[in-house]
View 1 (cartoon, one colour):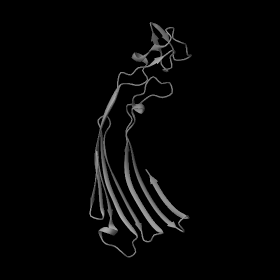
View 2 (cartoon, one colour):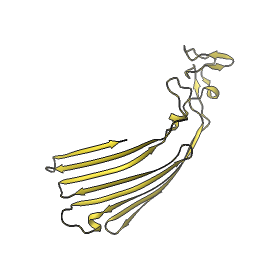
View 3 (cartoon, helix red, strand yellow):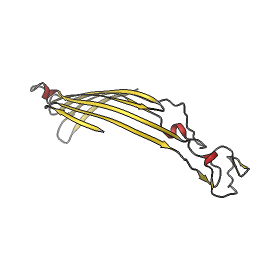
View 4 (spheres, one colour):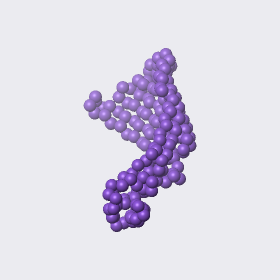
Amino acid sequence: VQKDYKFGRGVHLTAGVHYEHQEESDVKSFANYNATGSPLEIDGIPYLAFPYRYFHTGWTDISENGAWIEEWERTIRSCYVQGVFDLKALFSLTSGVERLSFTAGVRHDDYDDIGSNTNPRFGIVYAPTERLRFKTLYGTAFRVPSSRELYVKNNPSWAGNRNLEPEELETVECLVGYDFTKDIRASLTYYSMK
């Protein structure tokens, strides 16, 4: 659910909430040979991972011991708010300012299986003329491991890892741009990501 609010000529607020429940259950896996990377037993007959040997039963439900992923569930709750402030309009600036705006926002995410995190975002855009512009942005981000990264099993090339931690990121971007003509533009950007 998201709502936008405009106050006067220079303030635009956006706020929202998010709820999501994800679940993978009753996982089924069918195969006609053992491609799990681990030994399997079908009707009392062992089948090694390598070399491949077709099951004597043909196409077989191997869900009990050879399912490709564990059953899992996750609930996500988030809320966010962002404001864009047109400083030129708010302060009635006329000389030396073609455009001047400030953006500030924050987002909070809570994952019941991983944890929670709060991330801010800030930006300022300044254009003293129609042709020259400056922009600076700062923000942080939070990425939780996907269900595949956590819960995949019985795959000879990769397995999930329940001990994975969320990735956290901090970014800074600074830009200066100039429009030589309406068709020829140049910009120089500094970007840092940690």
